[in-house]
Image 1 (cartoon, rainbow, N blue to C red):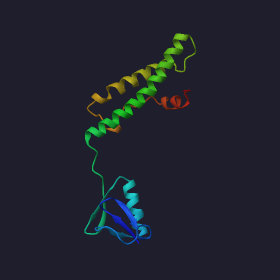
Image 2: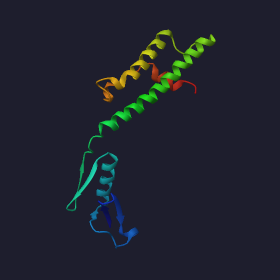
Image 3: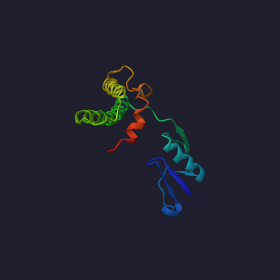
Length: 146
């Protein structure tokens, strides 16, 4: 038999754990165990009340957490964009052919500036309002040598 332990969020199996099990556990079928695992993986909260297990949407993350996550995303994007910017400038200084065309370089600089300004935007940290990269940037950064 399989049991769900609301106190720990784990499962107990009498084959493995024997029959001396803690109070408050709820017997579940293999199918229900799978549903609980899937709900947890989907970010839902598992609620057990009176021996009945239900799933609830997780509360939204606190604003400070969302803002920090967005700053982390922004930092990673800026780092990759700055690498491309620096490579272009180095190529210019060395008199080498540049990876970027002049209009691409200007678009990259504008995008980097938009990323810098993003945390001060009234729409920050809404993901759907992130600065939009130039369409060619993703292909170029994936092909760039490291």
